[in-house]
Amino acid sequence: MAQERDELLDHDYDGIKEYDNPLPGWWLWLFYGTILFSLIYLPYYLLGMGLSSAEMYEQEMAMARQMHPQTAAMAPSPAAPAGAMAPGMPMAGHGAEHTDSGIADAAMVGNAEAIAAGRTIFLTSCMPCHGDKGQGIIGPNLTDKYWLHGNRYNDIVNTIVNGVPDKGMIAWKTALNPQKINQVSAYVMSIRGTNPPNPKPPQGQEYSE
Image (cartoon, rainbow, N blue to C red; front, side, top):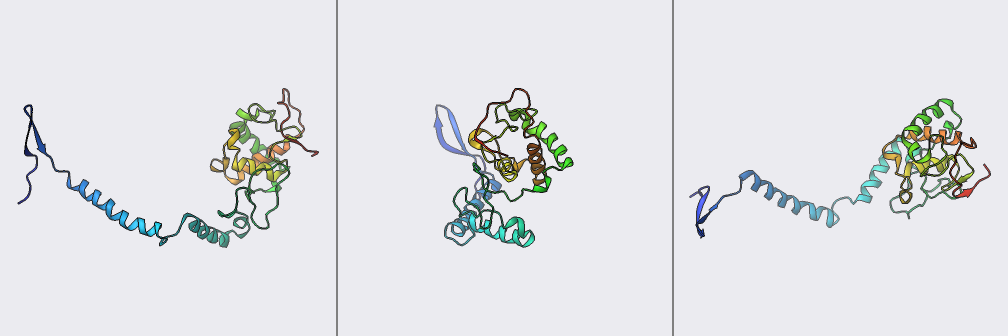
């Protein structure tokens, strides 16, 4: 015999009676479904039946290498130590602390259109920390000979891509696409030696170029 809903139980607390209200059927089936899912999920991943995160990464990179061999080949392996370079990858300049992003396009350097587009991006995204002319505010002065993370074009791209979390600079790779990152990097290269007013004191290693 099916149980009646809202069955009055044989409880009485100072005149307060208690009903047995069964849970909705949809809720019970959802709960049973989560139990069934866990019985499949746990052995699949914990016992090695499914791909680990590292294995999935390697699988995706293998597909990417087939489609874009030059770019994907420069991506670091997840098993490599932090800051390690992929085989054949050029080393960053002295003082660089970031893994090579593999997206640097040196053809942007000196390109008037790229510099103009980069200036717009700089004034929108970089000015609060580096000033409207790159003179430095919270972030370092970008117009002098002193650099914290390398002064080469590739170093600048890498710093923008990966950010400097311990200094409060975010990784812009999630907000800017590779083209925009290269454009703003080209703009930063173009303002070297411009000597803007009220520059921030030098920080980092001095470079001759």
